Image 1: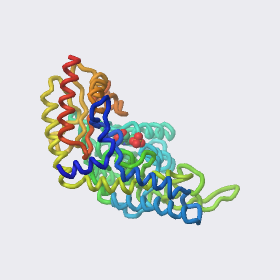
Image 2: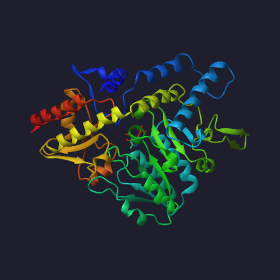
Image 3: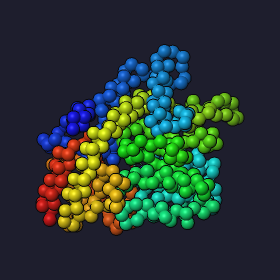
Image 4: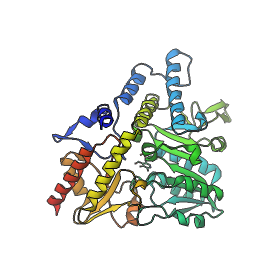
Length: 408
Ligand SMILES: Cc1ncc(COP(=O)(O)O)c(C=O)c1O
C-alpha cells in the first residue's frame, strides 16, 4: 500500500507515541488528523497574509481576501455547487445547522408546521430543531431507525403531511456508519414540497457529495473532520433560499447600507457572514480538500475495503459483542464500528485500550436518543480514516481482545 504509506508521512501525528506505544488513532469521526499542507497554509495565512478580509484596499488585505475567496471556490467545486455564492462560511457544522434553524426557521416555519428529523441524528442536527419547534409552535416528527440501523424510509410518505416543511438527515451516521439514501429521500420530500437539510459532517469525508445531483436544499459540514483547521464550517444552500432567508447574525460586512433607523443587507453569502471570519483557518480548506481528493484514489478504497472485511469478520467472532449499524450490504457502511460487549463497560474498554495506544470514542457520541433506541447507555466506537492501515486494524482487534481478557 505504497500510497497509504506515503500519505501517512504527511500526517505527522501518525508518528506520535502515547504511553510509549505508537498512536493508533481511530477517532477520526470526531476529528481528523491534520496534514502538513494544512498547517503550512494556516502558518502562511498567519505570518504572511494576516489582515482583515473584504474591508481594505491595501495589498495584504487583498491577499487575505483572495485566499479566503479561493477557499469558497474550492468548496463549491468539491461539492459541485452551481455557484460559489451558495457557500457560506461558518465556524463549523453545528453553527451552519443553527444558521438554517435560526434564519430559514424564522422565515419559513410557523405554528403547526412539522420538521422531520431522523432518529439517528447527532445532537447538532436535533437540538436546534427542538428549539425552533418550541419557539414557533411547530412539531418535531421522528423518522425512525430500523434494528439494523438503516432509516425507515418506507414510512416517509406517511410522515410527509402538508404540514411538513423541512426534513433533516445526515448522509452518513456518526454512530452507525450507515450511508443513508439521501438522494432518494430528497426526491420523495420534494415531491411533497418539503425541503431537505443534509448534515454532511461524515459524508464530506467518506463520499464526494454532489449537491446538484442530490438536489438537497442545504448541505453542512465542518472543516476539522475533513483535515482542515478547526473553527471552519460550511453551509451550502440553494441560492433561492439564501436570497429569501433573513440574516442570522448582524454586524460588519453583512450590510449594504446602514442608516440610524434601519439597514439593508448584502447579497449572499456575505449577508450570512457578519463580523471578522476565521481568516487564517478558512483557506486551509483548500489543501484539506486536495488531500481528501487524493485519498479517494482506488488504492485507498481497496485498503479501506480490506480493513472493513477484516474488522467485520473479527468483531463477529468476539463473544457477546453487539455491533450497531449492520446493514445487509456492507457496502452501505463506512469504516465506522460502534459496539458494546457483554460484561465489559465501554468506558473501561476505552481506558484500557488507550493505555495500549488506541484512541477510541466511548459514550453517547452526541446521539443520546439513538442510545435509547438501542437500549444502551453508551457504545465504543472505532472510526477509520483512509490513512489507517491494516496493521493498525489488526492491533485494534488484538488490543480489544486483550482488554476483554482483563475485564471478563
Ligand atoms: C453527523 C454529525 N453531525 C454534526 C456534528 C457536529 O460537528 P461539529 O462539532 O464539528 O460542529 C458531528 C460531529 O461529530 C457529526 O458527526
